[in-house]
Length: 125
Image (cartoon, rainbow, N blue to C red; front, side):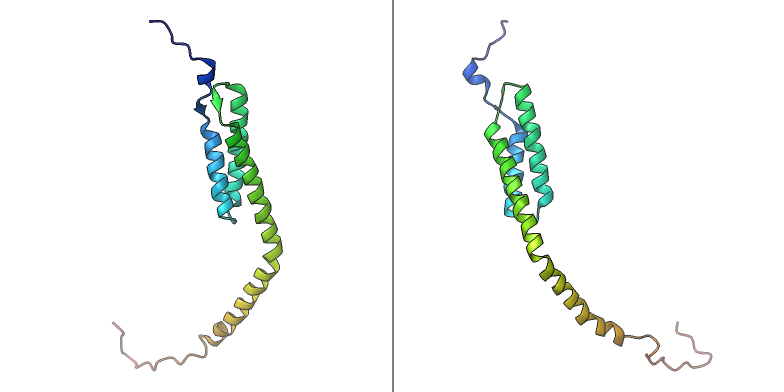
């Protein structure tokens, strides 16, 4: 059987899985601003996709990979700026919550509790 040759215009129909994954994870990380690890993963996957597409001509999805990388960097930028901006307020709220809880802990002192009167020779069980 003769081997079938694929025309040049049909060769680039194989979409890179890494490019799709990069864009999908970048979109998820952009929606969830605290997901910096997802943004880093999207950047790594997008970079791998671009490198694979340079080696294998049959792969397509360069725009998906680039969009994933750009969206992931944007997500990282916004997340870092939000953390820097709101860190003092969060720290203040945490210290305030701890100061409200500490008087409760001081009131519960084992030495101040009254022990039940023990009857000599009595057993609990």
